[in-house]
Image 1 (cartoon, rainbow, N blue to C red):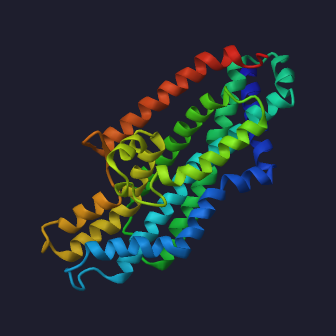
Image 2: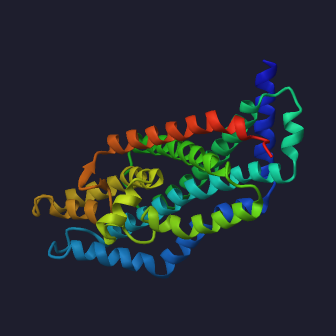
Image 3: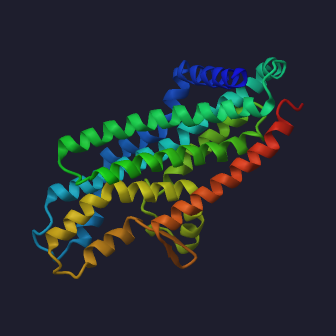
Length: 306
């Protein structure tokens, strides 16, 4: 019980350090904010043009409101997906900060084992990222609901929560592994700048992955965060897409829905093969477990090593 109290105490301390750092919270949401700004400026019109092009020849079977809601769902997917990258990363920066400020020397002098210290960082990052992303999801769905129906069902919402939890665990495990190689906050901040710049492209928030050549698509689709984005896109925008397909009434033999799923990357395509959602989920879990094991084995050995 004492060990549990020590673990929970360190986890609480790490969470408080993050939430008391308003700058870290702001920068963790900077990329999602940029996506929102770009969406309002021109991305929405770009996505709507692609959507209208695919709907050409279908007359008035698909309403403008449904098209607008579908594109809004793509926006929310991009915001959530990038948040699942930037929030865990910023929450884990405390590892490097503690090392730089020699706080780790104080921790290592306590009866708490090294693996418990590392686990407290992991649990704090997962918890803070999950809570913060759930707030973003709730606000986003609330705004979309006020604008019209997304045709979400209870199972979609449950799956969304599950995917967000998987996304936080996956990103945290991968970034904890990366943090082993950072010795100071300068390097950590530089990597954060790179992450903020490229994450929107890798997950398809700025431009659908279908716009890139096959080699780039293969690389992007092997990144777990891209798979998380695809899962979110399916569960968040799948309902409105199915509704639009039902509105068409089968006159196109499902061509519109197939085109939408291909253009806006509703499936993972890697090396000429299409993965089902279950296969994508399994791949993400396998990668997460591998990185988690690497952290569990390596981190206790290098923690506090000078």
